[in-house]
Length: 228
Image (cartoon, rainbow, N blue to C red; front, side):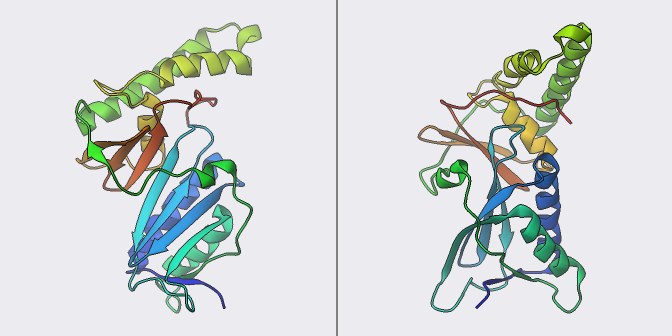
């Protein structure tokens, strides 16, 4: 019996498909962990360019149900899931309905997700416009500094060094690294007028109306890719 998701409407499926497409842009072989309970689906991914976890939720038309199971927790291919969700968004016959692909062996990050509860709001986050401007300045600085390097020094190690310096800087008066804001911008989350910074233990979570980016305060490496 194939597990099936019933989205609240085709728009929910379309928004989720757009998120999956952005994720695959950074990793063609991306996997996502799906967790559905009640009328909410949470999709977790990890674009390797940013070394953060990204979370996108979607509303379901009815509580998830698959035989005797009432919750879903599985890691699948992002590309295969995008195919099913995209069909759900575009087809009149299957509007709002998407099958869940077969499970895949999950990458290490899929076993270490942020906690579900215990989050508290943190101060010090810039307003949305200032956050977007910060990302824009950081991308411009990265590109300018790379262009200033002589050709023989434009090697991966040097790009990584510059990236770590820029993307590990804190955002405003917080412990959130700039790479989290950059990931939010690149994944389409940094829109609108609502930004909230939350913490739970070692985790920080930048939450917007369009998705969340989560990082650990310790044990997270630097950026290793040229910004898009």
